[in-house]
Length: 239
Length: 228
Image 1: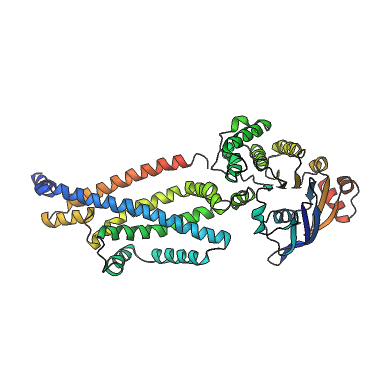
Image 2: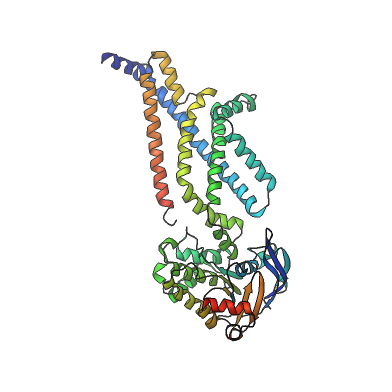
C-alpha cells in the first residue's frame, strides 16, 4: 500500500477543509478526485506531500508516518504537477528538467541531459531545449512540468488541477500526455474537472464534498450509478 | 575672463592642487567600493537568515537580531552612525578612519540591501518553493538555484539605486577626518576663497561616477533578465 490515511482533518482558521478522511491508496492506482470547488480536493492532495500539514490524523506512506520531518526521506519520490506549472523561470527548459535529478544525485549530469532530451523528443519539444519558460505556451509549460516530475523517477505523481489554467485548445495535449504517463508503473492521483478525461484515465474515482469523501469507487459505478444525491447533482450540473 | 583663468589656475594647477582632488577621488572610490561589497555581503546574509526563519521557523534568535539591525540602521541618520562608530565604538582603537568609514557605510548599506532582498524573496511565487520541495531540493539548494536568481533579477534596479545612493553618501566621510572628494574641494576653497570650481568639479565627478554605475547596472539588468 502506498498511502494509508486515517482520520485526517485540516482546519484553516475555524473552517474544516478536510474532516475525518480515511483512505487507502494502492500501488499503481490511477485515481481521479472530483468535487465542487472548496470541497477539499486540493487540500487532500497537498497533505500527501506535506505541502499542507494536517491538523489531525495521520498519513502513512509505505508504513512510514509522513510528517514534515520524515518527508525528507521520500522527497522526489512524490512528484507534483501544479495548476500554474511552476517551472523555474530563471532556467531554460533543459535546466528545469536536469536541475533536481543532478542535485539529488539520481543521475550524472550527462545522464540527466540524455534523459531530458529523450523526454523532450517524446513530447515534441526537442527544439525548445534552450528556451526559457516565459516563451512557452501554457500547454507546453505543463508538458515540461510533467516531464520534470518524471525525471525524478517518482513512485507517485500528484496532479493538482493540471489543466485549469490552460486555454481550452491546450487542454487536450496535456491530458494526452497524462494518459501516456499512466502506462507507467506510477501511482497517480489527479484532481480535475475534466470528467471525460477522468472516465478514460481513472481506475478509481473519489467524489468529495465539504471536506469529506462522499463516494469512492470504480469509475463505472461513480459515473453511471452514483449512489448519493450530492454526486448525482454534481454530475448533472457538469453535464 | 582673466579672473576665471586665474582662479582655475589657483584651484587646480598651482602647487599641483589637482593631485589633491585626485587623492580625494581615490579615497571616495576606495570607501565606496569596499562599503558596497560589505553592504551586499551583510544585506544578503541577513536577508537570507530572515527568509530561512520565515520558511522553516528555525534560527529565531538570529533572525530577530537581523530585524533589530535593520530597524536601528534605518531609524538613525547615516552621519550619526559614522560618528558613533568613529568617536565612540572605535575611540580607543587605532583604526584608520578609512577602515571605520568602510565599516560604517557598509553596515549602513547592508540594512537597506537586506530590505531590498527581503522584498525580492517575498515577491517570488510561493509555488516556486513548493515545486522545489516536491523535487527534493532543500532550503539552501532552493535558495541557490531558484529563489535567489529570480529575486536578484527582479530587485536589480532597486539594488542599483542603493549603490548609487551609497556612493554619494560617502561624501560625509569628511566628518571623521577623511579627505575624500568633497573634503578636498572644501580645503582648496578655503585657500583660494573660491567655491565655484572645486564644487562644480566635484559635482561633475560624482555625476560621472553615477553615470558609469547606472550604465553598469543597466547592463547587469539586461544580462539577468534573459529568463524572467
